[in-house]
Image (cartoon, rainbow, N blue to C red; front, side, top):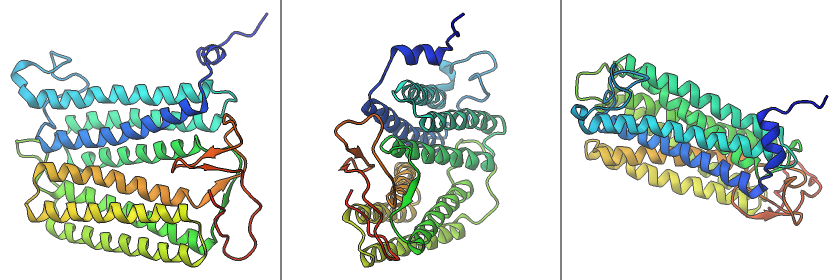
Length: 341
């Protein structure tokens, strides 16, 4: 008797998406991860956090917002609906990775990690509403969204690589400096989340509990970490230049520096203009770009031998969209110069 096929196997036997399609699906997941952060911020900034006062339905009697709930109910419910769009995009990543020939199990696993983060964050979002916008739950809701963005970016990068073991392209001290930059940026984002939890934009017009800290003092700490991250970025650029790194990885550091400068300008504008909603929203969007840029810097410092199994022409694409030949032999010396990608 022939072995029965499950749904995934049946679909994989009929649909064979190209490597380019898989990459585009992974990129769409990155975009949606950013969109869900920005729209979640819009919910808070428009005081729509309790636009739907219960969860998973909008009211105890209705799944959708009623006319009496006004624009706040529409905004909150619209953000909930975007979660379904995000699930659909992540599902597409999983299916495309599963049906691509040859099947790359690593991509499928990364897709499922994204799916379960989305599911967990949906529950946290519900708890946020049921607890009346508890600032600690709201903060964890944002940080889980950042975790989703992290996995989405890694998945996108992995669609442009083979499944060979990664090889460092720079020496250990350079990698350690880069890791320190990543950790400092993560701390910057966490402190920014605390500023939000203690600041004036509580997410609802009614009195909402806030983190009992002086938000201006926390803001100063946030600014201090901005200087630390900028300093580490400059130090990393000079280090890569000193060890003879190729232009592509140095360019990712320059891109990070530019994003940091733009984000710093927005941060100062929002502070001195007393936190207008539009500028705060732009700052949240900028935080996503900063985190993506930092991940790009980190991922640019290693490579996997060979090419994408589904690619043709003997080339694979990296995050910058440039084509690269198969990895050359590892250079000798304490510092490995990056082979031109």
